[in-house]
Image 1 (cartoon, rainbow, N blue to C red):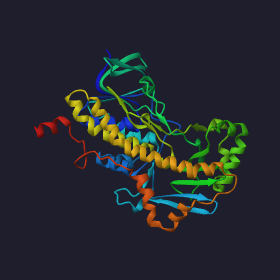
Image 2: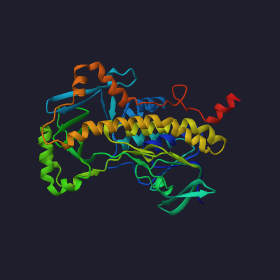
Image 3: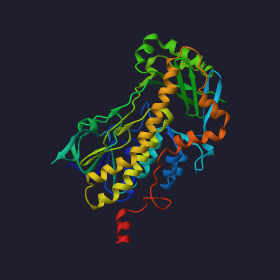
Image 4: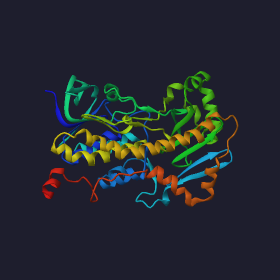
Length: 417
């Protein structure tokens, strides 16, 4: 028999898992569909910012998250030809968490899933891929799913597309995002991390190249930024040229570059920056990357997705208990989340135009831009980028009380009535 649920969430990433957890805590019946058998992916963001750590605190998941291997970093720094500069100081934030946390996203999702599956109204169906939408009288009523046992239909009061920047449901709904373009793509590979190496995020700018090394304890996860569409040229030049380029830009990695044996050890992320003009159609809501693909600049993708989920859960819980959320309710989520999304993307587009693009187009060693040198001389200003990156333009909270959303919505309704 085909399953029925209050909310069918397509995609078990940060937005989908967080929304499923929050709604289930409110007594909503939730089914999350994840097309993969596990949460492991070759490229997924690893930065968990103070705003997200605050949400974990409210959910009582701080201890579980702390048990996952991670690195807490209080500053971001970057290296140019004329030196290394600190550009963001999270310790200056008046926040419970004066740092950003680097942890594998698969572990982060496992923490959320571990809490969610303990709730009676929550189901996580792995290896189940949504392949189509169910529509009746102009309203989306669920999804068609391909799973290990074949095709089935999952009917729901509300369907939520949290299936990423290549959203299948977005295509099935006929929605096209507004594209803003990006001047770069990213090559992604691992290199050993030596004892005594820098911690956290190590970022280097050089002529025609930008490299970010993410500290994962025993190894660096390296993001090597190349001009948009340059993947074929890099591969045609050969793996030795890539190794030499990395070693030249970051001499401390010279002894490790041989670990990239061939391009089988290198993956490519095609960077996109876009957002939907509307985040919903009747019966269907888009959140996270399905609604707005973010540039990797600032590493804010996970955190915006989490904020979308917190906002959506707060707005949807009541209407879901009363029936089916109407179009005005779904549109109100878009209205609230438009400013932080559009504002963050504007900042990313500005950084792409005035920082990344000139670096990638340069053939000579590049000194730090004047603004970064100013931040280096005036440490008090470093709280500004720290707040934009770590807290965001409109942080969302779960609700009243330390644990927020801790009791089923019906009990809140009964108390008010």
